[in-house]
Amino acid sequence: MYKDRWKNSEFLIELHQVQFDPNDFLGLIKRYKFKQYINAYGNTTPQELCYEKELLEESVVQHYLNVLKDFDIRQSDVNSSLSSYPEKTGLKGWLVKSDMSREGLQLHRDMNRQASIIFPLTFPQSINLHESKDSGISYTYEYSPTIIVLNSGSQWHSVSQEPKIRYQFQFDCYNSWEEIKEIVQKSRL
Ligand SMILES: [Fe+2]
Image (cartoon, rainbow, N blue to C red; front, top):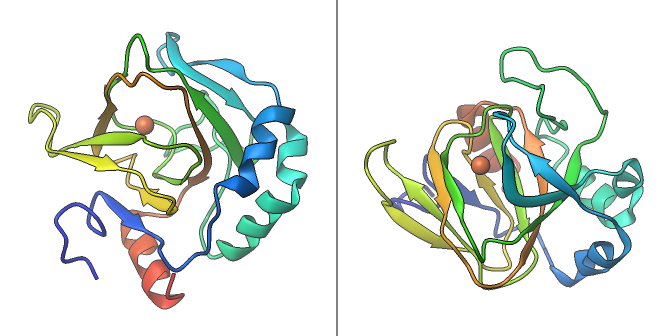
């Protein structure tokens, strides 16, 4: 299962077995408002987020919370950390709108979550994986209409400049990467 160096590896796992149609989420993009995302260092980013409470009540979000119920899905915010996770908002999912036309996302690891379960909604879009902080880009993963679990708390990643605005839906996941691999195998996800 983990034979590929990049997909289904220590970096990311594709959940091919989970049925997913990005169109099911596209209506949400039109109905919800996004707010500029300020990162953990207090800097603006090319990302806008939507984490309205009502979003969680949407049937499509409820559906995937149920499908993925074996994962420890919680919502982080900028005050969250891996060691002391506060249930600040009680939310578990969010929409992400990214405009990388002027700048991409800097090399980083996520500070406040172990992993992210990512639903790519528009295409093309990609993410750069880095073997280490100093390795440069090791692999550019092109998203397809497949949900992935990204080891975003442990593995360095970045996003290059992209001309088109892109959208994702994400759940924050607090299992360790070892647990995540077990859950995927056990539940045949
Ligand atoms: Fe990240």
